[in-house]
Image 1: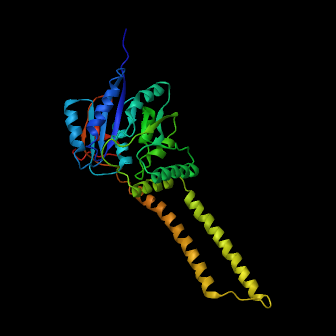
Image 2: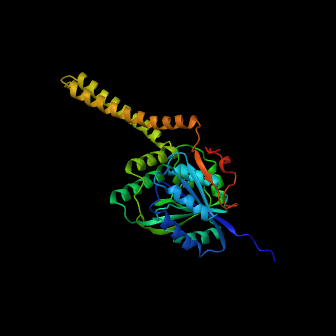
Image 3: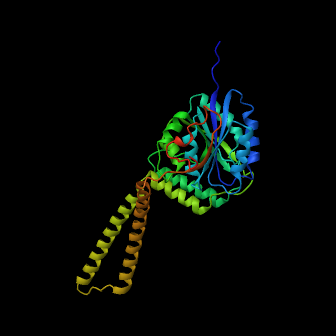
Length: 335
């Protein structure tokens, strides 16, 4: 009787300065994968311009293990683009995106695979708790998801990061989105397909520190909102109409009070300054919103590559795209 080939699974690991935790990460994942002999696994590490030797550690792994593949970006492009670089290369039946810091437990992988076998195409890990994070970070994250959910036309999964299993159909769909200002969490929702959550308690980082400060997180939040809704522009228009109506009513009141016999004239300078400063603030805010959208139009119209690669080391055939630099959106500087 002819045996069926094993389904291929790619473990996609975007990394930036994770040398301190990579040995423990690889050891931990290996223990989980050893309990899943019914699948054929391959690792795909995407180095996002690390300066601490992260790529060197993976190169050494690749010399001993043919399952290891490495894509090195020419500089730090950001995690969102690094994930796209990995998705462009993988050819597996399913791809599991996971960070190397072990905050997302690899022990969820068997559960994810079981749900995938049941027909779910996007199995995402949903945080029930977040250890090691401040009250401010947890609160701002919760507020951001609420705002994004309320203004977006697609359903955004709350308390969800990048740790998920993606069916090959999902991966192929995500490859079609080539915008340079990326928010993968929203794109995961935008492509659709059958989704299911796997709740878990998030651990502290196993080593090292977070690469996302509040400035980077705020930029990511702005990218998410401006990429998936034009509501800020609509709100600017509504505020402009409300302010104009209020100013017109105020003008009528001033004129009427001045024309009524015995009426008092309104003091000019204080009221004039208040109105000018208020209108100036509204105008600057509206121009800022418009400027955010124009800046993104400017970036997209230049049609620059989403990322560039300086090195591509490919491992297991059938799991990793053996064409390497021929994937769309990337350029292999090694030729």
